[in-house]
Length: 211
Image (cartoon, rainbow, N blue to C red; front, top):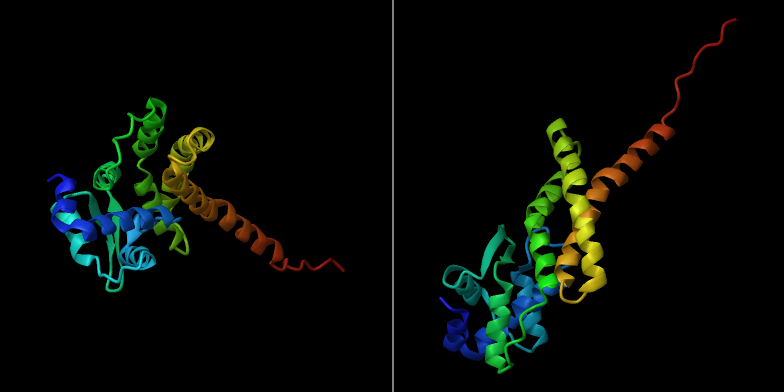
């Protein structure tokens, strides 16, 4: 179902919720649970002077329009991931009466394709789970090594190109890539440094000298 029908049906309220969804997703720095939470959207609405619970419309956007999906849910939290950001942006532009922008730069589109082909959400989810473990199993260590040697070089290459060429257009993707690097660094370099430090501080066993 076209998202333009969503705004046509719910009017100003639907438009404001879509705007709040995008604003909330752009502010999230570490997206380990998803692109935005219910509280994020409520906060974005409150900043616009709107006191409204968006739960019903978020449910519509997920079940009927398929532009978001639940990525995490607990008794106290609920997070969503944006599936089709372009469709949301186009629906907002149409409501605001803005002209359709020119086709994006092919280079920009290529970089975005390359980024999502790495499956960044999956990598981030794996690293978040590993960061919650006190000690990694052999299999988990091998999985971390695979990410470090196969996925992270591609991610760094993307970050360098995106930051130099399209820092604004790919701001969300760059932020997610940075979050992945930070988690991977903490799991390897920082934990390894703490282990080395503990070994250096450990008392050496005393050897009795011969009489």
